[in-house]
Length: 228
Image (tube, helix red, strand yellow):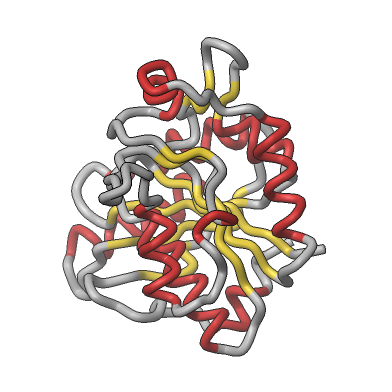
């Protein structure tokens, strides 16, 4: 069975997929057997034959250079760029926890490490009408430790502190924070880093600048040690 790590974030469009791809790439480049998984993926384009392309999964596959099939990366793929619960209301095919668990189980039996990416922030509803599933339910069901991706810029302190407080209240273990879009030497961003650490008690494990192909401050071996 694999060791696993969940990538959550302070919200949508803060770079969770890019960071997840970096983690997969760093482990893969170090010779480790690593896979990617996301329970539900919204905002995807269609192929000429009408089938949906799981865009986040495709990015990670190509960016990290892994051979994992797209089909094994995400069981639920939607076209509309909205929360999965709403996308499934519009398009059909609502998320079922049993399917999420079984697809993950199969993946975990064939790889040493699995990076699991969340949809939006930690409170994102994944299913609602047929089966009420919050993102936190998936994290708990799959028994995943987490890291939090946060934008390094203005407003991040509030998002980081609230996400940490919510996950702590729900008993979801957090290993630390990764700062995305980081500019070394920027007075505000350096202070954001310090304040987030002081106000949550979590370490900033590493920082990522635009275009980085590795996470500054973390080796592949140190990354692997975060998985459980």
